[in-house]
Length: 231
Image (tube, rainbow, N blue to C red; front, top):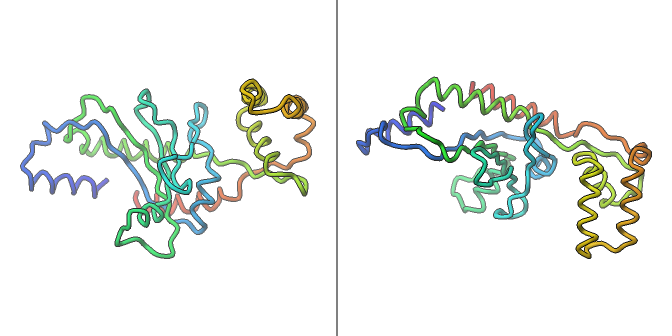
């Protein structure tokens, strides 16, 4: 926040613009986090952000190798969240100062369609502190997929089905497969097999061990280190 404020002050001095007449309609707040493990492993383990009305992360198709994920960016949403592999992004843009041998993930909160906000409002110390506190409060609600230990020989497709049921519920998953069947993406036999498995989920889930992701402790330690440096 201090760096952003200093940068704006230098810009004002060099350009002579009046900060009271500069309207802000879009801004981002972000933080780089150095990880002790490979960045893509962390990206693949992230599910959502928030507690009750959580926002699901989706792969951003505009970026290669699934190295960026975001929550929905529909025009109805004034705020969305994104996470990406910072080193991969710098390499992709042929940045001359790309660090070597580091795993860095960047988290960002994007604010858009801001109303009645000017540069002086954005840079007020009270507002910067409020934004910083809000940023940390939101990102401390990051949710990861649970690890699923399945019997030996369980195919990946079965594990994906289990994870889908856990996070979306039986009814929603059955609805997904019914839509696929009605659109001829599944045969009648495939749909029947899936429906029977979902209907018997309470009994079937006893075959699997579901526990907190092994990624979580790595993430918490790395995140808290960067937060302490900033605050």
